[in-house]
Amino acid sequence: MTRVSVIGCGNMGGALLRGLARTDSYHLTAIDLDPDALAGVADAADETTDDTAAGVTDADVVVLAVKPNVAEAVLGDLDLSPDQQLVTLAAGLPRGFVAERTDATVVRIMPNLGAETGDVAAAATTEGLTDEVRAMLDDVGEFVEIDESLMDVSTAVNGSGPAFAFYLIDAMKRGGVEGGLDPDQAETLAAQTFKGAAETVLRDDRSVDELIDAVCSPKGTTIEGMEVLWDSDADAAVVDAVAAAEERSRELAEAFDDE
Image (cartoon, rainbow, N blue to C red):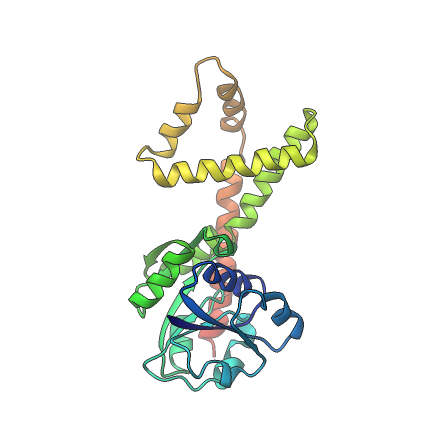
């Protein structure tokens, strides 16, 4: 059984803990100075503690899930060995910055909140990635291995992406409500439709354009709706949202480069 310690039990750290707990393959230690944060993940963790140094002593994998601005201070409290793996998932925090401050093997990943349900979309740097961490990511969803130079755009696509998807789901929900559906009914239909469409993209060999064509019958209802989208700037707005998030990730990284 792999021993995993998660430092920082907020939204992302908590989601990862709950996702790993679903597999029964890990001994999980939750570490946070906030007692409310620890209480929030107590049902998923085997141990909880506010003692960072003690909480990582026996860990095979240590996950640094804190905000970038406190990462350096937390790293100063850690005394990890080369046999341990340190996984950092803070946006904009370069792998090299972390590696200079620990003896552990360091890999940088960018997951998202889907980890909680086993539906994570994650990117991991090829440098520092071990089979142990690959197995951990496999257990909570899907991941890709990338060069760190692509981490900013990954942060935008899969890190910030859930918020963009929530926005679109809400737009479809509002369309359903305006047509007469109950809000709860509209939300279920919209969210499940996105879930099913995403699974189809991942499992089907056809391209997204081919899948759109498969749904659009000539002179049918879907083609009418697609004509509205094709004539709009909806796709450009999404591309711009990804670009804005990518640029912000770059700005965060530059702050560490200056140190």
